[in-house]
Amino acid sequence: MVLCFLLAVLPTTSAFSAKYFDFSPRAKDAYQKVFALRLEEARWTIQELKQQEPDNLISVFLENYLEVLRIGVDDDEAAYHRFSKNMDIRLNQLARGEPRS
Image (tube, rainbow, N blue to C red; front, side, top):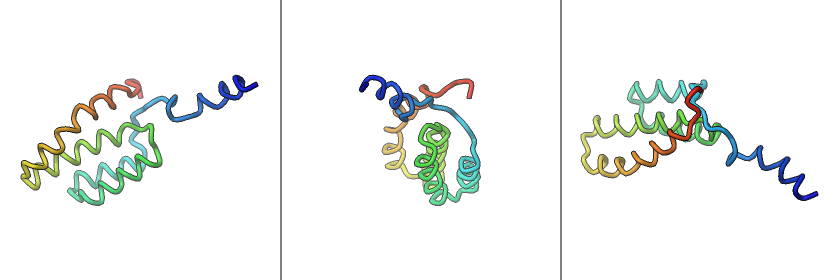
């Protein structure tokens, strides 16, 4: 009985959900804010996107753009070193996404 329950419930958890790339309306909004250099607003929108669409890896992609622009706009070497630590983490996350999405 417990096995039947686990088989029914586990596939619906986010641990087993397929990771995907989708420029949903919220992702498009974040994208526009990033490239309009409304960086703080973009950061908040990306955080909302991560909460509402946790399997949508576009948030990782946009977060990377946000950090690159922040480094370039602020010309902040310390930020570069801080953000560069995230690169491998993000690349690993993006590699888990469905390539055809």
